[in-house]
Picture 1 (cartoon, rainbow, N blue to C red):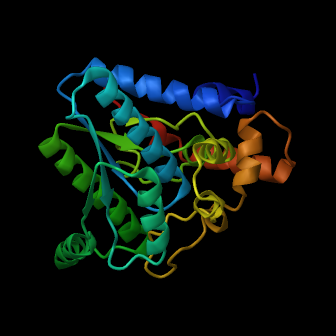
Picture 2: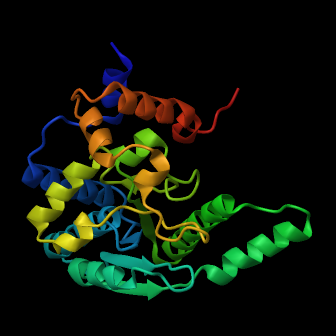
Length: 268
């Protein structure tokens, strides 16, 4: 078995999907999990205004609405968190995503002061962090906030990472990948778009160029400019299709170089 097939099997990405079935499967999966953990009543998710959190948020909202109807338990709820660093440049998209998802509660918590405080504390100890490392600080601060809210609200932190990001290691270790459950980890970017179309999402939310938007020096920097390969090529690779050898090499090098980010903590 070649590396491409091994990766596809490991990430469990399908070559072809039926969006309606994938939507129902994920909702049922989450409902079953919550029903088997009766102390968990809330789903906690950070909404960035991008494709992945918009899709995950909508799936979560449908789930809690169905659970409320089926169990008559009004405590099931989706709590959406807006976690900007200062003023977010695509704030309109964030508002549009919230309007599409229609979460039960929305909290706006600005993480800028917390990140700057951490940076300052490190500097006092002689540790000067780069803009890239500071970006990771932002991601981990957002996850810290989500878990604080989850602790108060008896909640489950829902991740938004997709297979195209997972294969390339395009996430912050113990940041945006440090979640309790992930509904879209086996979907690539292209497949996620197809689910959003069926769900009636405004097209500008899934057609926009993906960006982690973690760097002060390069705000809204597009993911693909960092990766050196397009998501379309990554998606085709994950669907078992043949792509040009140069792009294939980049994807596989990204996967191998970031292998440690997908591993659980090691022990003796």
